[in-house]
Amino acid sequence: MSMGQEVRYRVRGGRPLNGTVFIQGAKNAVLPMIGAALLAAKGRTVLRNVPIIEDVHRALELAEHIGAKVEFHETERTVVIDASQLDDPARAVLPADIAARFRGSVLFVPALMHRMGQARIEGVGGCNLGSRKLDFHYRGFARLGAEVTEDEERNHISVKAGNLKGGHLYLDTPSHTGTENLIMAAVLAPGTTVIEHAALEPEVLDVIEFLTRMGAKISGGGTGFITVEGVKELTAVEHTIMSDRIDAGVFAMMAAATGGEVSLVGAHLEHLGVARWKLEQMGVEFAQQGAVLHVRRDPGSPLRPINAVTSPYPGFATDLQSPLMALATLATGESYLHEAIYDGRFALADELNKMGAKIEVDGTRAIVHGTAETALRGTDVVAHDLRTGAALVLAGLVAEGETVVAPGYLVDRGHAQFASRLAALGADVHREVGA
Ligand SMILES: CC(=O)N[C@H]1[C@@H](OP(=O)(O)OP(=O)(O)OC[C@H]2O[C@@H](n3ccc(=O)[nH]c3=O)[C@H](O)[C@@H]2O)O[C@H](CO)[C@@H](O)[C@@H]1O
Ligand SMILES: C=C(OP(=O)(O)O)C(=O)O
Picture 1 (spheres, protein in one colour):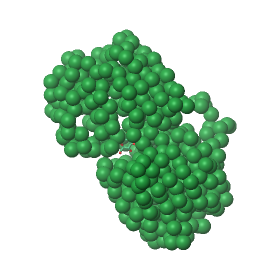
Picture 2 (cartoon, protein in one colour):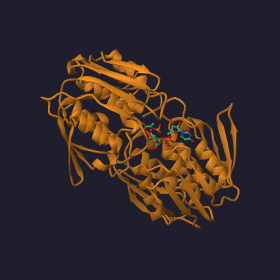
Picture 3 (cartoon, rainbow, N blue to C red):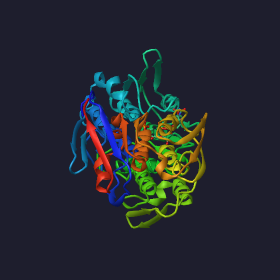
Picture 4 (cartoon, rainbow, N blue to C red):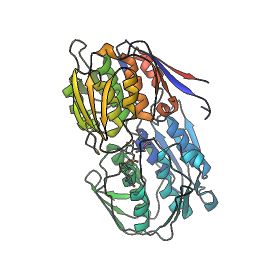
């Protein structure tokens, strides 16, 4: 897609989702893995089950920009990365026009430090979710010996690696990308690094598995207390990316919203953490059979309201809070949602209210007054961020008439072939490109 074209999702409501859908590879695992692949000075990395999403395109553009050779075999969902030529420090720049479009760009900094001795980041973007700092990342790099300078006015950050060496690190809160970035900074730094209060997300464990296969020495993944012994070099390897638990959660909630029955290929119930129990309390039925997760909701029994507070894994994922809010508008009764990670995620409430929902927001808390399913009406709504976009498509699936969700780019940042996968389940959803 060219940058200037407007993408919209046009949804006509009223059809239950039924059938089988392929759950994509995890966005939040593939982005750090592209960053990790750049740590290998020899050979070619092969990543499989790569989701065809805009953030992956941006990450690969960024990898090429700094000097890697990249092939994306989309039909095979396979990326091949040759990072043997990352030796020109003049290219150690993450330019604003790419980096500002996805926050995952910060995951390139360790590779730039190790391979080129320096990094300049000219503006890191990501979903518009209110204040999102990167201080844990930069403070950690500094504790490993890097020199970090910030030009706040221009939104530039410069990092000089110097002689990185192991150190004792901690995170104020268990930051997902912060943990991945500090691990990647430590794997090639001589000596021992300890990271306290590390994130426990399944994607972080998948990244640790990938780095370990590359030759890194990492222990304590999943315990919140990670130890890294620096090694001299890492080797290019092959890895299959885990499935995307947020993509799975969204399809599960869409099946629930429409009173349908869907098989999610590749999805794993244990990756959903607390979200699984919350959805079960609402009346969603799950059954895991091997690598397929079956989801259904009896159309004869209405959804029950729910209370949820977002927190790091295994708590209720903030990325699933938006679709949960949309789902809660269909429950009979009052739901309470507390967004404890981001202060900008409730822009969705106004959009759902445009569709006839009754949601009251007070700071980081929201009360959703659930109404009968037919109460939502289709209209033009704004996707303020990726998950708001997905949540509005969910609302559109049960709304009367037509819902148009834009900008679709934000949905395309994180969900692959969204419209065609929904259409294959019987939904009336079209992705339109044009003015
Ligand atoms: C590419 C990727 O994996 N993105 C995910 C990752 O984002 P990301 O890794 O950016 O999220 P974090 O876990 O770092 O953020 C959690 C909270 O900590 C704050 N914070 C974070 C870092 C820091 O240096 N200083 C600081 O104050 C943030 O502003 C936020 O309020 O985890 C989020 C929380 O599960 C998900 O919503 C994102 O989908
Ligand atoms: C917040 C998200 O992503 P990112 O961290 O890439 O902005 C998300 O996936 O909902």
